[in-house]
Amino acid sequence: MDTEKIKAEIQDIKKDVSIWYRSAAGVADLAGEIIDRYYPVDLWEMSDRELSAWMGDQLSILNDAIDPRPVPSEITSHRRLLGPIIVRGKRLIMKVLNLYTHSILERQRRFNTDCVALQLASYIRLRRVQSSLDQITRQLAEKRELESLQREKTEYDGELRS
Amino acid sequence: MTAAARENQLTGALLSRMPRGSELDRLLQPLPRHSQRDYLLKALKNLASEDDQGGFPRALRAAAQWLRTRQGPARAMSLLLRMETALGLRPPTLALYDHTLHIIGGGQKYGLTMLDALKGDFDITILTHRPMEPAAIRDWYGLDLSSCRYQTIEIPEFADAGAHIDPARITRRMANPFHRVSRLSGGFDIFINNSMNEMVFPLSGISAMVCHFPERRPGAYFYADRYDTVIFNSLYTAEWIEKKWKFTPHVHIYPPVDMPPPEKPEEKDPIILSVARFEQGGSKRQKEMVEAFLSLRRRFPEETRDWHLVLAGGSPENNPYLEDLKHKIRATGDTHIRLRVNITSDELHALYLRASVFWHLCGLHQTDPALVEHFGMTIGEAMQNGLVPIVFDGGGQREIVEPGVTGFRVRTLEELIRHTRRLINDTELRQRCGRAALESSRRFDRPRFTREVREFFNQRLKHYTDPQTS
Image (tube, rainbow over all chains, first blue to last red):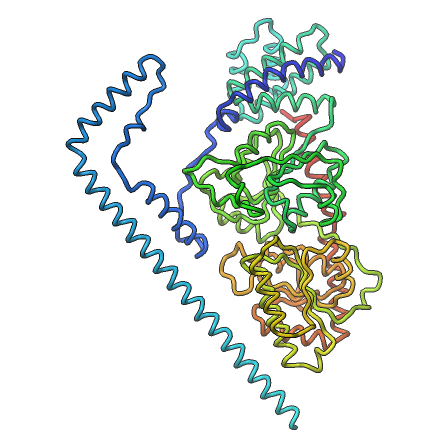
């Protein structure tokens, strides 16, 4: 086959493939495989900076998940015809169950709020202790620097005198 | 089944009037995914050169359809791109992505010098999140990349972030904004991720990630191990990739050090030079250098009477660290300390030509390995110009400076002051170390970098266009 013809054929097929490409819902669909994996976290391996960032992230995740009570709007269905009926049914069941679960879940919510607040307090306290420690380390380094300077000056003065 | 037999049967299956997926499955499923693609390419290439019956378009369509259903649309697209390149219908396309390209830095220079080495053979696109101009690249790095295309990918999630686009802000509860780049990557033969942003999933036929240091640990949207090749800049970086990412990176290419040596390295001025970005966190330790220089001048006023400290480097606007540093220098009243911010490569070169001693303290008082210098390109540049480097004893700096021969390595400001004083007073030592540094710097020079980069990509391209299936 001559080159121009091959080129034109490839371009033609490319048009179809481009449509497939554009219509893919996400990168995992484009790649045709599961792309996101779970990586276990080894906290002992982390540096202080990494731990600090990780603690901040985790606190934010916990904070977002404080309330365990189900939200009716989270019940959805992808079925076009039966979907609305299923959703209404499920929401109705949820309302009925809420009569029994509300007080338990409310207690759980308060407990979660207290836990997160306690974690946050510990985090803030830790940051303050770290900050004080850094300050002391800096002061110590400056003191040593000063002592070394004075020692050197004494030696220098001694040399000058002699 | 032998490779040749499989190829023949595959060609037959693709050419049949009604190509059946099950027949392709039987022939290809036992193979790894990348080998499946190699076999398809080989069969199609043979058809393109030998078939006169018009079966090629049907075969190509069947192969693309099969790949789409078994490996996703990106692989189908990649097959077509690969065919075009393999048949020589157009030059191979290459995209380089860097989310920090709008800031001056060593990592950015690494990626752009790579492009400079490849620009003659590839159709290159530079992908960024902030607009970039070839003129800026010329001014900052002395590289002419005007023949490349520039594409800015908007990410509204970072619209308010100014110059600092930090992927660490993205958690697993958020959608991945960098998937916009992932999607684009599938439109090129080669995709190079020169960012320390491992949240971009490569969809191109050939993919490479240049790792300057593994800043984050594997977590949400971690795809560094999904690249065909991870290129690393120093043995220090490789060590931390193994520790943090739990895999061994593939190719070691030292960064390009590109400051031609002076004609007469002996004729130098009494200048101590530091070239490093003015990081907002102060990780390059310019304040400590000022402290050390002042201490040196206070203690030994006679010996240091003619000596100056010049701190050069890039900085974004509104940098509190830099402002604080300026204030500190003004407060000392010492006119022997100068700041040179965001200077051009010509101005920087002039500084290298004149200075005698080079300070680099990135890593001092640091416990986080990410904040220790991963390589230290500016140390290599200084050595190329016959400066004697005194650097922090850690990170990639250990691979560059041989203590007592090409320079000195220090762990405290006291050691820095001691070695500097020795060099100030001993002209012969300064000249000897400067000559040795210049000689040693050839390990990192640009022709070597260009050669290694071209060899690597040409080898990858060879397999891409003409895979060995046996």
